[in-house]
Length: 218
Picture 1 (cartoon, rainbow, N blue to C red):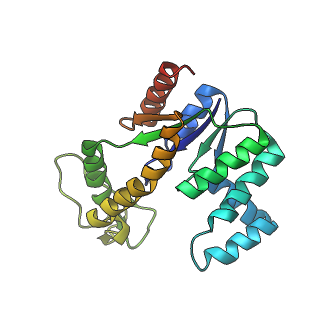
Picture 2: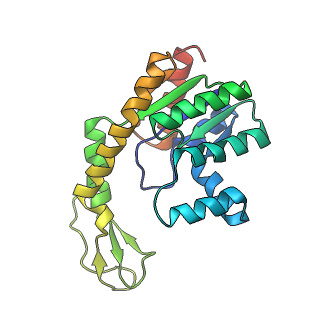
Picture 3: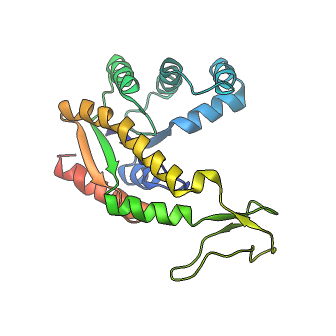
């Protein structure tokens, strides 16, 4: 099976992609991993990417080149694309690339956050505080308790990152939904879109995706 996964913005490293790839016995292809590998190895694609990233985001053409390079070299018969495509132009380029390689996507899974889940995640993330003395010390108040004023590990002052304010978190969700909407419409018109609520643990979400794929005949 060949899938692409459209995920909501995340602040934790863990997500359903790993669980889903293991359950389906397919290779997980994460665009961020591909990009970091090229930069670390100093390839032509990596050098070009590094230069551009100092000025702003990568252009769609270079992103597609990086994906093309990986798929041509590894030629996986089945895979799960994670964090790609991220806009309608990338989706169109991906379809053309996979058609050229003879490995079109079977389904595209849109992990949708219901409103109540967005609110829960906003509250959870905005409660996070970091220690000025040691940024590896993260603090979140337990349910029913107040936020701490000082680090309970070293006593350092706690602060909230600008990215962790409710306004900025809501902004990330809003921008994500605006970006994903045309991608979802593109694949829905082709009958390849599967929408699943991203609620619960990563394993629970992965299980919900598997059930939806079986219901759609996969």
